Length: 348
Image (cartoon, rainbow, N blue to C red; front, top):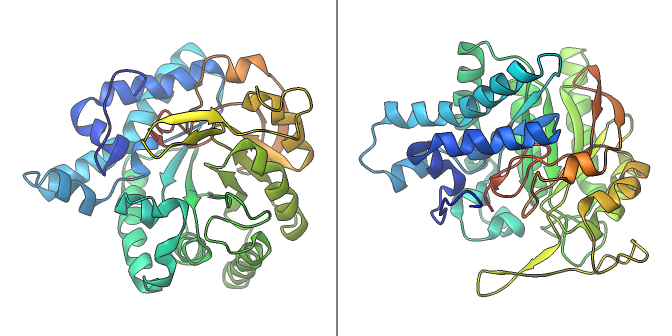
């Protein structure tokens, strides 16, 4: 959006893959040049065969599958350009898997309201189809340093479905999971289910994975995104109490409030930041989140690369993706101008 692209369709930033992939590529590169260690394939967040068929009915299935592949390859090309300048820096690409609600484009991705009306098998069929398409691209292109990012998930059943697919069925590459926090209920995710319940589900599936494969879990981190910064600390604190030996992560939105007229209002207050409660940046809160166990930190909706990473260059040394890495306070590429540190969507 900041580069002049209007993204109002149900495809969100995935629409840009058909019309202006070079803009998406440049957006990814902006974050890498700003210091990000991880970029997300923002355009896969809301991309699906069904979505492209509905928005571009004249496109063949072959063309749609090519566009889904391009959603990943634009990030790969950005990484290649960056590594021509800085060949020693290892960059991870996180393939974004957004929730079923994002494809509905009715706001239910932030409430999880569909959890009571959709069957587990319907959810599994939806996610399995596109996961297999993305895995085909990863394998065909022999892509390295790639992970799956399950993100902006509002309800427990969807986390369960995605982890069953990626840890037990289509087991292939490392996985990150990020849920959205509830707007008013502390220690709860967007659906109203508790973080403790969600962590219990995650631990149960990890135990199944260990029993079946007797290998290290592919689940490499858990955290929260697309949530106001003021809500993040308590969510991390609760997750830390229930998830042992699993790195945490967070990439909140800017804290601005989405208004009924579909514009952004003022930032929410941030009472934990003494002296900066009403005027803050994500960088101001990094020490709070680091102390709660966050080792991957970024930004989601309405956060940008300029200065966010280099300004607050807190070096975070962690062991994740099975190697040592230094992650700075970064921002990922989101779907419109949102997530961009970790994996992100590029245009919310």
